[in-house]
Image (cartoon, rainbow, N blue to C red; front, side):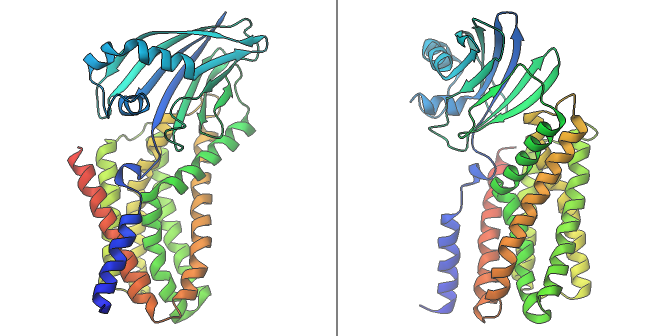
Length: 367
């Protein structure tokens, strides 16, 4: 096999092994709005129709007529899966009407009325969808007398106490974790970051590790500055952009940076590095709007709004730092071998570019 064919084969196999476009961010999501009452709580559930259909073996989607036809099945599934209990024991729930809300993603909207033997130490547990999708997330918003609070449930944390408003420390810890998780499971953000880091291996080979760390530090700082500005502006409601266009622009940013690596697979000069820093900051603005979409689903708590926003941003930075530290040293070691330019930078960038092009095509068609 020639080197050219080996190069193409490596890129193709790596591309096939990457997550699909549909999984560029998190898995499926659900929103639960919980309002405590004198004898329990009212829960409004908003579930992606595709997720419910797949979980119940009803195909890959549901239209309004199918929702009406399978209403009893859907109600039973929700009543068994979304449960509550108090200090005096389990609560009894009853699901009201189930309706289909159409939009970018069709969603089932249902209301559960829950009666509890006591209204002390109420907790909610969700066991739907996690067995089908381990990456499933549930954004829980509690509308209590003390204020509005936000929580996120995952496969390893399926329950939450809903009758208290978390303190500042709990809020900060929760939103830092959300920032880290979102960065580490946002494959498009990770590929963009990787495309920036690949060239640093060549800088380490030419100028040493200290110079490579300095260069990548400036790149990541520029990216951080950009996404911090747009994340704050979007989360606080100052600027609003259609998420579909934002996701398409994120995919385009991946293609462009990977394309630059393919066009110039060499350690950047000081002038070229300044251009890359400006590019990273500019694309950071776009990625920040993508990060803000998570906060829009989770919701910023009223009592610690600014703290939650800052904590989420800190979590993103911690995730970025973990990625840089984990990748830079092995890439610098590999860069000492002649194969790095062809297979590390070029083949790696080609895989990233193909993945970005696929995401761009799918997201553009979905607009």
